[in-house]
Structure formats: C-alpha cells, structure tokens
Image (cartoon, rainbow, N blue to C red; front, side, top):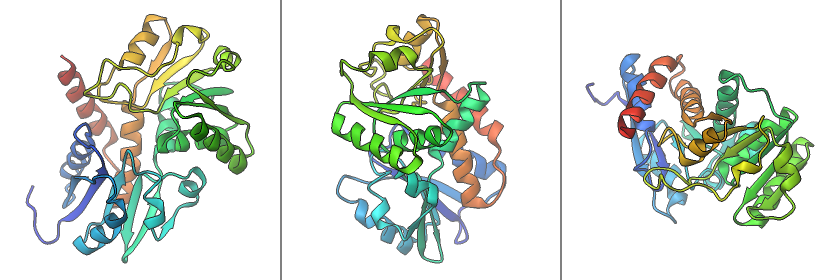
Length: 287
C-alpha cells in the first residue's frame, strides 16, 4: 500500500494495546477493498484521554475506535454521542466529521449479531461478568430485547449502579451483585447465558479466568467470552468440559469491527475475509 497526502488515518485508543488485532483486520479490509486508508494503534496512557479528541482533530485523523479503559471516560470530550451510545453510557467508535467528534457504540449490536450467527436465542435471564463499557453495551442490547440481566463485579457498587442505569433506561429488570455474593444462586441456576466482559484471561494472562463456578449453571446455559485473543479462553475450555455450548469473542470482535469499518468508509466490509484471516492468525498463535 502506498501512503500519501490523501491517505485517511483511523486508529484505536486504549491502554495497553499490545493484545489488539484491530489494526490487522481494518488494514486487511482497506487493502482488499482498495481504500486509501491506514489504521494505527494509539496507546494512550492513563490521565491523557482528555487530549485525545483535540489531538485527533489537529492531526486530521478521521475516526478511531475506543477500547479498555476509555469507553466511558471518552464521552465528556466528544461533541455528541448517538442515542444508543448515550443510553448504554459507552462509546467504542468515534467519527470526526467537519471538526465535530461524534461517539457511537457497535459493541452491543456486534455481540447480538454473534448470538444470532451461533443460533442462540435472546435469553430470558443473562449473567454478565464485569461492569465496564462492554458490559454496559451488551446489557443494554439484551435488556431492550426483554432479557433480565444480572451484573457480577469485583466492586459491587459499580455493578449495582450499572444495573440501576439499565433498569432506568430500558424499564427492564436488572440486578448488580458482587462476584462472591451468597444470594446469586437462584440467578445462576436459571441463567440461560453467561457472558464474560472482563479482560481476565486475555493474552498474555491466558491461564486466568473470572472467579465464577461454572458447574452451578444449568445444562442449557450458553457461556460466551468477549475475549478473542486467545480464541479459546480458559473459561470456555472449562465450560466445554462441562458439556456447555460456548461462544468465543471472535464473532463479536469481527462484527463490531465490521460495523465500525463501514462507518469509517461508507462501504460494505469484506466480513468473511476479515473473520477467516483473523481466525487463521489466532489458531496459528495458539499452536
């Protein structure tokens, strides 16, 4: 690819970013579709997120994705956010148009796309591990579709606040509890879907898993992990060992990336190519 003065620049902000394969799939799609653009990682150290938007404007960056830990904290520095991003309180995609920075969220819909692709119906009751930006986006999408959501987090106050926010915005019942709360057994037994939205188990700490006892789930439960690197996390391996259906983070990652890429370019993304090449890379890395 030839980079010139007309090359559009996009990127990813977060910290750290060594694990991210967003540049891989976005640049792959740019090349495949003949788009004169490049996608770069921009590791933003803690305390510097306030300068990101003005810096992007000054450099002529056309848009960027947002990952841990800035999906919520970026919002005050944007000129506007979409209704969905405002409702779920989380932004993972920013477009800069005519010097205005507008925030969107493609995480929640990307996850719901992955459920549909795996033939999994919207659950009556879902347990979400974590209370960050991804948990907000996924919890919102589940709630507007009628799911009761239970958020489990190391800091129960954060989970409780998220549950209140989801209930207030959607009118759907939601709960927030601590990881080790003694009053979640009924929720666990009735849950049809368990989703890990925390970074626990992400490369390079692949031997870790969230502190959740999978054997307490019923046999119909589906276990999903939004981590895609590694492709088969320790959480998913343990769930498979119990005979439970599992969903890796690959589908959500590709789906949210496709939605962002199409917003960046205004063109249809080569989704199958992006997924196939990413799957191949991840499988190669695991051998």
